[in-house]
Image 1 (cartoon, rainbow, N blue to C red):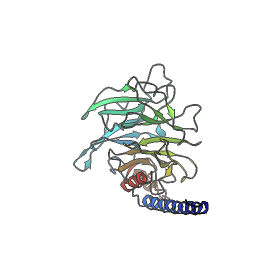
Image 2: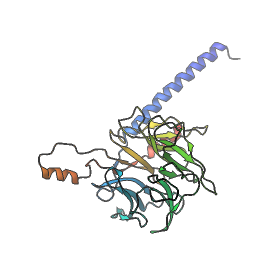
Image 3: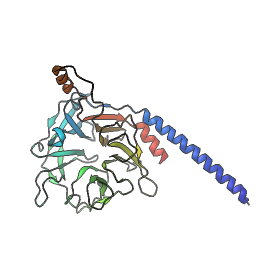
Image 4: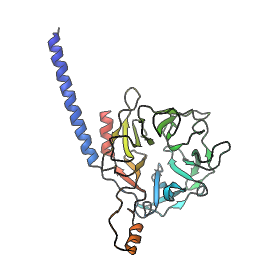
Length: 324
């Protein structure tokens, strides 16, 4: 029989080892985050001196949909670029977009369905509320948009919805009684229509939390947040699903991804190893000496408008899954 003092010593030893492992694990995470190298995605084709954000890559990796917008999000339309060989082609307007304020494109990762949100008119729905729409596609041919059925749509706006492989929808919204100003929600799939939104309370803060994207295996959830402790604006975070089914404490993705400006709209490639996001980081704010120089500055990619970035997160994926 082990004596009580011996048990206590063993307990202290285990605690010390656990604490040491935790420090080492955090140090390893810091190194991984510091090694991330985001870059402009398809510069001068997708990422330009115009206002682009909110992207989605098709499962086959050959279509890239994103948003082109006017200043201050006053109007936006959905455009698409096709990959030929290793080169992304000049974007074109999606056939159903342009007339109304459309945003938040999303290719389902396991079907030929394309999703987006829009302020296009809906009977008995207040003007200005974004509703979630779906449209089937076959190759380059897109069908007619239809409202996503069920309670995902209602008297609340739907912000940046993404669809998990089990067909559940993760999205952000402003719903009375929730935790913060903008919060994360889940609407579960049902054959008769999506169920009423459920707040993901363990991730929401009293600030703004938005733009959720869940990995295909359901173990990681990326989102953006204005919570305290960040770099000053919306920062990208990731949370790991715990054994009890709850989401773990969010991890800020660090200053190689985030900036003092807006970093948002995280989207994963089909294999989960590439993260796409939107940002207006790295603006060229140096003084200008004349009017021509000012015009030239406005023509550059880093002119203060949003752009789309991509980054390889293979090592981060492996670490988070091992830790979780």
